[in-house]
Length: 261
Image (cartoon, rainbow, N blue to C red):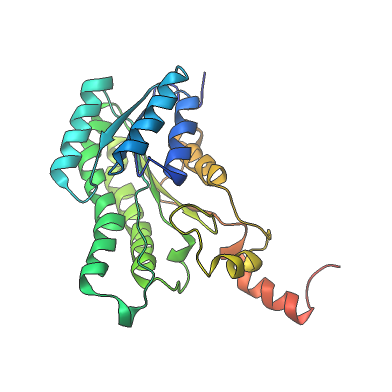
């Protein structure tokens, strides 16, 4: 049996990048996966490829900022599999401008997708998960939640996701629903490829390399599985040690102090 045998999961932003990796990994571990995105053609292709491998996946168009669309998707998943046990709020966008250059429309758009979308997802999914006997929500935040990132709209939403995760964990514990967050570090995807910050961030990461989308997806898999059954309200950094002291280690390296030969 797979680690997610019998689970039915919604994964937002599942058409590419980390969401696609999560979808493929979840399906291999026994879950029926609803791949949800606004990128219809790649999402349908991923679902078809998973199904062609003899696993269970279906694509659903989902704008995470639209409550009615959320209700339709949850109803569609219930009609398909009869239950819902797992929600991965993976959908997210960047802004890449500082406070002084960020328009109100751009700010609101990032909040709508990255933060409000996760809240709407839990509103729509939690009652169905309760009816299934409980389950797990995994919110995809970022190490940008912990540091002064150069994209304040993005950083604010990821920090907000940590607060939302803890509040949701307390609210839904009586329904048997655990809520946790994964905070990836420097992982190159289509969303951030080409960013000028990538190489400096890699050098400041104690493990000295980029992470892979599979490494991040494995952390999501763990928190979605029953292996993490006594964990709720937590955030798990998958960042090569960056949050633990990457900047301090970089300073020590440059100063030649406090490091073994």
